[in-house]
Amino acid sequence: MLFRHLAQPLAAALLCAAPLTAQDFYGYDAQSSQIYNVDTTTNAASFLGQITGAPAFGFSQFVAKKTGGWYAVAPGLISGYSIYEIDGQTFAATLLWTPSGARHTAGVGAALSPYGDKIFVCGFVGLSFRVQLDAIDLATGLRTAYGDIPPGWGLAFDSLGNLYTSTQGATDPELVRIDLANPFNSVTVGTMTGVDYNLGIDLSSDQGSGDIHVYSRNTTSLYRVDTGTAAATLVSALTGASALQSVKEIPCASVFLYGNGCAGSGGFVPSFTVRGCAEIGATITLQINNCVGGAAAAFVYGTGTTAIPLGAGCDLLTTPLLPVVLNFSTSAGGPGQGSASFPVVIPWMPSGDVTNQVIVLDPGALLGYVVSNGVLFRF
Image (spheres, one colour):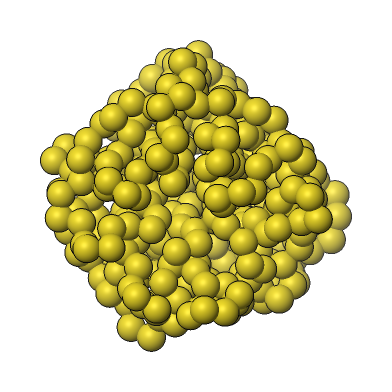
């Protein structure tokens, strides 16, 4: 049978990864095209490397890749921009794409999608106060336009796949959750009290807590911001960072999201995400959202990725299937309200790849069940 219980130690060994023990970041100096290592333990920013091959106007935004190195955005004069890839060893910049049809210069914010397959960029349109959001497919260069978002600075995804920006409030900046289905319905979460908005701010993820980080350029201070309340907590007041335009968290290299889930009751697609990176003895959190409430569900495991059609737009994403299934139930509620969260301690470090996917029984789905996206742990 698909749904059966197995011993927790075996499941815990396969569900591995953990929060970053010391929050480490990269910083970018736009004037000199230099990359810095930012250590929040010592509160210091130290020179890491000089970018070569940067365009004449430099880069307005950069984000760290999971596999090492960076992506950077080069702005045009009034509109348009280009995406570059920066080698993590040589710091050489190579042009990847110049998306067609872009109306802004991508000078406001950039964020790598949780899947690592797209870079989201936003910028002011011409000399107006309109800020437009795009997503660029890193494999094809194709641009998806999402429309206007509130004017402000920064972009960042949380570990649940929600995208955030900021806007100027009455006294301090406000945190805004962007509705990708309809940016006009974006929600102001609250005020980031105490965060200096002068000279702009930059946003990045916080894989350990699931919230986001905010960097104030004027005070060179880094904050952790609660995505539920917008409350800001000082993480580090950096030295040697006066020229940094952007500070981004170093992403987890051991956890990758891949593939797509399929829609069930109410059109909701289950979301399977992970907070944390691999480290023996540490704890990660597996998070499942957007399911039908009160449903039986299970994790299935494999050692490789695939996309085998199951029907009704659903794909089996892990193969070969391992003889491991862990049952659970989603929280009570209607369509889209079911969720589950599992903190897991890593007892030992396996080697190779482990893939996971969630299956949820859903009487409103064509197949009687739905599946989530896949998660790959690489050790």
